[in-house]
Length: 299
Image (tube, rainbow, N blue to C red):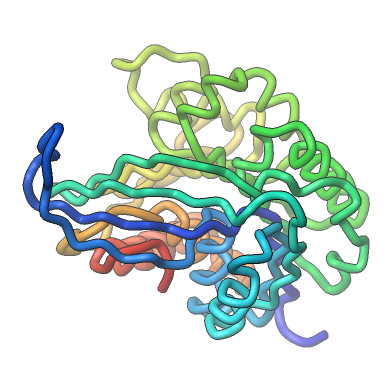
């Protein structure tokens, strides 16, 4: 195949119900909101942003329910992604209710549904044919069957010399699983893409500790660590030290849902095209800045 090689994303496809409410939630009565039902999922979002940013070929392995499989497949194809969606016979597609306040920050209510029921039987070695990079959504590591699949995919990529990245995905789920258990499961990855809370949690550092220290500590375990910091941009750490700090792009935020996924997609696309970590982080920041200007997590 021509070009830099394909990006394979293994992750989650969910249905997002995004409720943007300019006023605080009013308990026991109505709160006016703008509500949209949109395709989402951390893995799927990152894949779509990577395709938009210019990666020659983006593939996605995920599991969905029968009730919305065609809708999700069409949305992915329209975004330039080649989906391999396994239709689950027992569970519906995962659903996330995103409550977005006036400050554009979001709170998630998550029903993982079919998304974390990916299992080793869903894996096919041919998914890595012509691939230059494998990206694993951190959500996979929070359920037994999907974690087993993620470890199989990671092992297969390593055996073929394919670079691997992981986005830890959720500080809440990460705390429930246990940071060390997560780190053990992702041992051998090349790139880790946490946000500030996830970085501190994985590094075992208390809340007031500077995120730079957390990034540096994690980069002793993973060669390249890129910590997303929202409006503060991103920090890059390699082999135990901070090597770059990248400013965020200015944006008028409406909904922060999927901003981290957009950063991941932009970052990975740039890396596949030969960008160094700082250049790739700037591409990620540009994608994230665009993502927050509209509801939902897709381009």
